[in-house]
Image 1 (cartoon, rainbow, N blue to C red):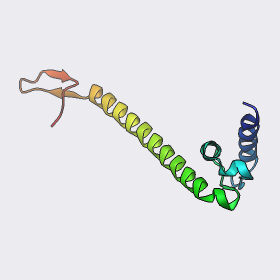
Image 2 (cartoon, rainbow, N blue to C red):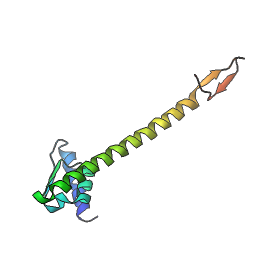
Image 3 (tube, rainbow, N blue to C red):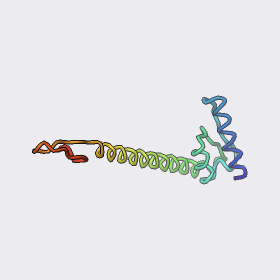
Image 4 (spheres, rainbow, N blue to C red):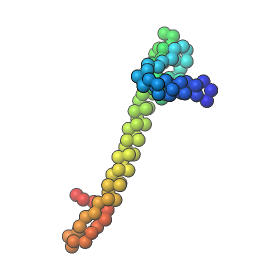
Length: 107
């Protein structure tokens, strides 16, 4: 929405033309924690801001990276759980009497 939409569109277009392009933002919005989280989500390489905002900006950048890694780990965990469920459904085992038991745990 608004400027954010334009930045997102510009990042997408720039990366489509040159995937290795280095993208950054400069100015006071580069030190705003919400903006930093947004820019990190878009994949910008770095932000710059005035010196008095650097400590807050560094903290916000670290928090954004931790949130992104936690979200990625959670997604991976969901994918692995779903794959394990599918594998469980695919297993066909013979019991002691030679009858097929579908979905049984193999130990």
